[in-house]
Image (cartoon, rainbow, N blue to C red; front, side):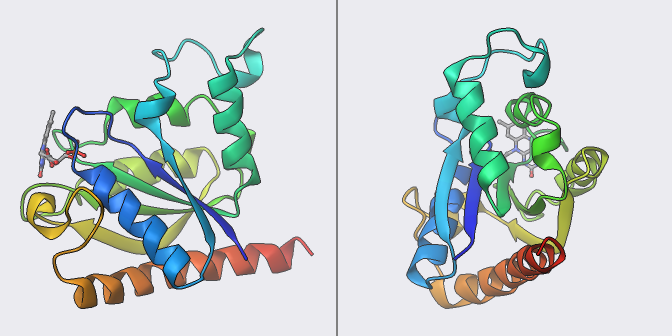
Length: 186
Ligand SMILES: Cc1cc2nc3c(=O)[nH]c(=O)nc-3n(C[C@H](O)[C@H](O)[C@H](O)COP(=O)(O)O)c2cc1C
């Protein structure tokens, strides 16, 4: 069974996108699609980036733990809010710590906002950053509109049937890439 990590990017007080990360964990586990774990950037509380992990003399336990989890995972879901047309600094702060760990890593991006566009303006900039890092950005989208109405804080969707259907197509693409990579590396 693939190991999928879900990066929850918002570190904001009263954040709503964390519920979406919880939804994906439950979805993957309930449908027996993957083992799933949330990487909560709020808990990691990384200091402002000052050097890449591989050049640090004494990296923190938290950074080593983060790197190990990304490295070992078969695929990643990033759940990110949109802040002023971009993704939060907490996410770039964490992405830049690593390099080799992102190599050929299938990454699916779920975007979140409290408005009607579902954070979709984030996609191009985040996709480009991940492409630069040689990650494999999966060709699927999961925009969450009006997050305050569409998910509760425990990740229960207001419309489970429709949300599960959308999540199914999104996750299928990620699983396809994970399987394709596994076959290439056999
Ligand atoms: C600094 C900041 C900037 C925001 N900019 C946008 C934006 O450009 N577009 C948008 O649709 N929502 C924007 N929002 C609203 C967020 O989509 C909303 O707060 C959402 O809940 C953010 O996710 P979070 O609660 O997990 O942090 C912004 C929110 C903040 C805090």
